[in-house]
Image 1 (cartoon, rainbow, N blue to C red):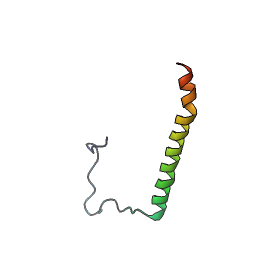
Image 2: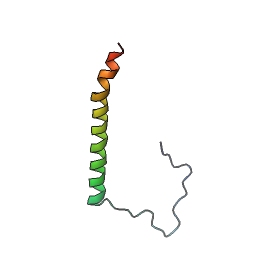
Image 3: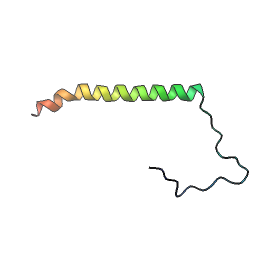
Image 4: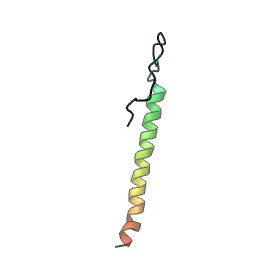
Length: 55
């Protein structure tokens, strides 16, 4: 968990991070999340019969 104990404060006058959430960032997050969900679902469905054979 990031607490920020070892992070320096921004320099005076720098204004901090000025990043934006663009449509490309949103699309990238949606694609990455969908890929993770499909990968986990595939592992659960494909790996389940192998797991049950050990019983």
